[in-house]
Amino acid sequence: MELSNRRVAVLAENDYEDLEIWYPLLRLKEAGAEITVIGTGSAPSYNSKHGYPIKVDAAADDVDARSFDGIVVPGGWAPDRLRRYPAILKLVRDADAQGKVIGAICHAGWVLCSAGIVKGRTVTSVPAIKDDMINAGANWVDREVVRDGRLVTSRVPSDLPAFCRELISALASVEEPALAKA
Image (cartoon, rainbow, N blue to C red; front, side):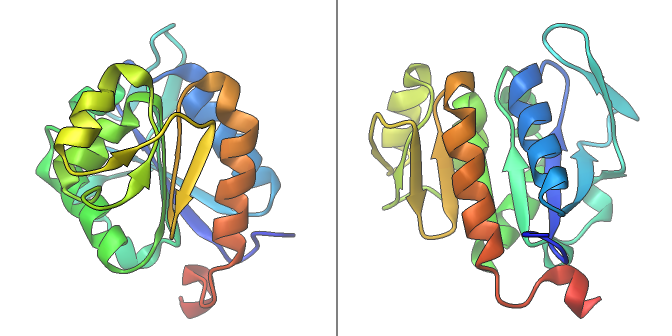
């Protein structure tokens, strides 16, 4: 499979956008990636904006970015909660510093801004947080998907096919997968 030996963390908190967590999670799993759902540690599971639950495998305090090849940050209102947890921001910051793939869609750009990893990079997001992205130093563009190195960003649920194609491409290019090192 395309992503065998790839390990991906999917971040979760209450009020995530259903499609923006489940579509990438299932698509990456279908491509062979091992998925770990990472929460803030505030609960064993979180509910989407529409009430659909997702069970957490680990808390951000209990994981290390070196264990993953990539991180997916979903949108919805969850990013506003996620960015309040230092362990989440550290995980994202460490993953970026280690050259890991980071995917963010919709409002997930808030997490990237709070982690301090968008300065000088070209990104997209839901237009509602365009100013936040620009104020954090990003070059914001309005496109369905943008890849700047290993950072993959998209705007809204209808961009998910392009977002997942680009995530899979980025993850497939990882030379030393985390699972192969384990």
